[in-house]
Image (cartoon, rainbow, N blue to C red; front, side, top):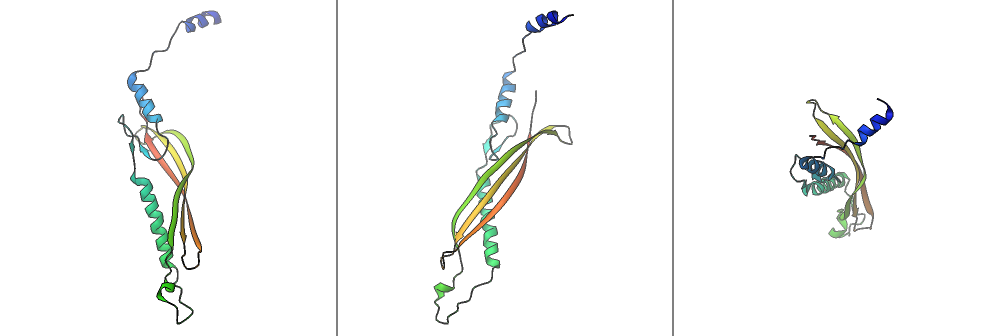
Length: 154
């Protein structure tokens, strides 16, 4: 066969259309845009509403623990009022910023099933203010999470 015959043969061929099930699964797998969805089989993705709340609570608990370990400030004057002796800080804000989402490709697990690995990098910021002197306290927590999603092929 020469090149012209191969070209004529190939130009007459048309790819078979993908099945509706395959299109739905691919659309479902590509719907993943952040770490807030769980892809589990052909069902619809479900939002995990409690995950950001849990991370915020964890950051607040860490900040409270750090604040409780700091030494108490004693008043310098014997006439200082009880309200001056408080050392509690008031929360101002808590945010989580997504820095990067890196698709690390498809890998095969120990059972030879394909899995998509994603690395999610974010930064949590928590701020408090000391009402006694207006000092601002900031805590920045870098996070790196790896998410493994099952990938199904037809």
